[in-house]
Length: 549
Image 1 (cartoon, rainbow, N blue to C red):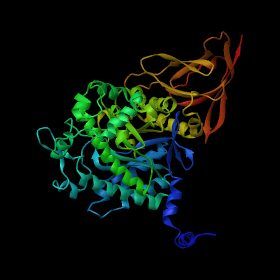
Image 2 (image 1 turned 90 degrees about the vertical axis):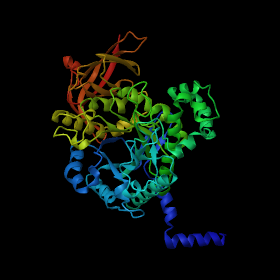
Image 3 (image 1 turned 135 degrees about the horizontal axis):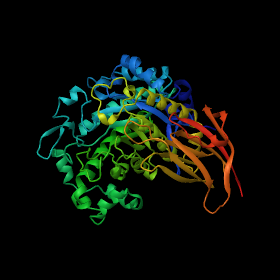
Image 4 (image 1 turned 180 degrees about the horizontal axis):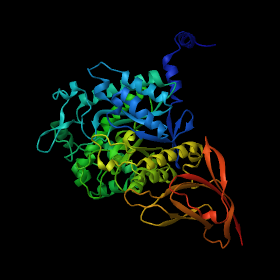
């Protein structure tokens, strides 16, 4: 016999629908990460999803009319499946406690209209290490919302990460944004990821020297952090392990005692990450979408913190961020430097999902995307300023390192996104396995890779000169003898792997396309056309091999 309290609960649910239980049930079906030792995948609407994305310019999404006229059509023409857009604190909460939801509503409805998913960037306390997008009522009240200060005591253009009032206000607004997203999007799930803040940290100085920060710097390192580093010592980022090693792996004492010359950056990383943890956690309590923080990268070896944002989630600070901000699901690099491969390696350590929310938008990006998805199991690739990526006259304020594509490069980029979109069920099936490789042309004219029982020789036919199109692609071993090759500007040949003297030849060599994961064959290549390279326009080949003595 059921208890009276249980029967009352059933009566309450039947009358009210119990919104709390409904919310909990819906959350189980929300976009989410699934992690294993081999891979991390983003599940959207029940299936693994790859974000073939474009990030819009910082101010584009502040106008729904501008988005409709200039941005949504460009995203569609480039075959993007996802748009990365910004929502700023100043527009969402123009007056304290008064929230304007028209913009977020319009972005969601606009994306649905154009059959796109969304990643929303929260321009809260930080945008490129400054507080330029906070509301006027925050900017003007420096007593309640104190600024960071330089070593000389000069007030800066960024809120102090040590201000509880600033953090609480940011967290309340962010939670309200997630509440609104839940109200209008929990069923359709247009928004699939949230970026919390943008390129956090502090510039021009190694740390905040405000009175609040100075007091915190004089305290001992939290035991929580040293315990985490000790527990994970064997998997720490090499740079973090080295800087800690120099002090003898100290586990207690002041920041300087434990971390030596890097104390200021570790100190800022801990407190900046703790700030984001409060913001992210507040949002997740309302609507637990996956959330990540992005990083302004260290530009070259030996660059001092403060010349890049000190305390941001650069790779050597990931261990600090993991400890301080467990509500964040990933740390993402904004890649404008030349060492694309090195950054991908660094940001896929320790099963960190590789999300690239900002990348250069020149022709090299076409080759880089194949490497990211094929070799590093990336979940997202997104050139920045997508609406001005193709040469039509750059937007005012564009920086030269963003790059720009010619019309023909833009067409090739759109073709790549179409190919990868149609191959998504194939790509996600082979993520985290040794059956898929990716490559991009660098200094070498050719490379060799083992794939199953064969060795594949890749010879690049592109160019790494500025303005030229480099080679890049990916190869998937569907079975021991069946391979898919995708990309541009390379030729290939197979031979037996080590230990075998057998000859290798083709049973089949076919051009074709994928549509919704299904292979549609085109020309059957044979004879001397076995060796025709994948040329400048990206396409797909399938080959079946056999061996003989």
